[in-house]
Length: 93
Image (cartoon, rainbow, N blue to C red; front, side, top):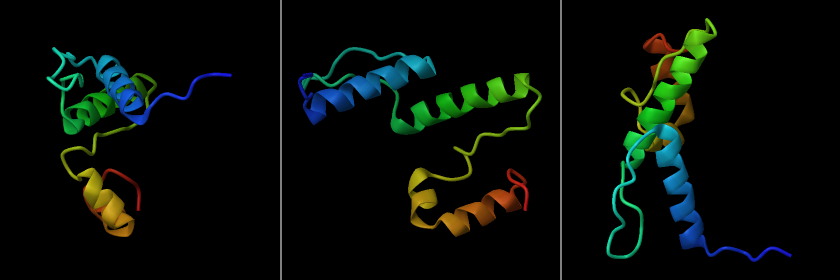
């Protein structure tokens, strides 16, 4: 049976992995031992950019949304977020 990791260590591992995938430097660890590196917005922008590049290489239209909408805006009102993306021409109406 596998040992269950504590939530803090799991969050740190996920954050570190996302930084690596996004190609962002992790930097030194903070006093509390947490990895330093890009903010959540930096990670999101890097990951979105990477996915957009891969989709475009496969001849698929794709644009990043990080500059248009924050995650809180999207989570707060999905219908309004969808309307904003349609207005920006990022998703078909």
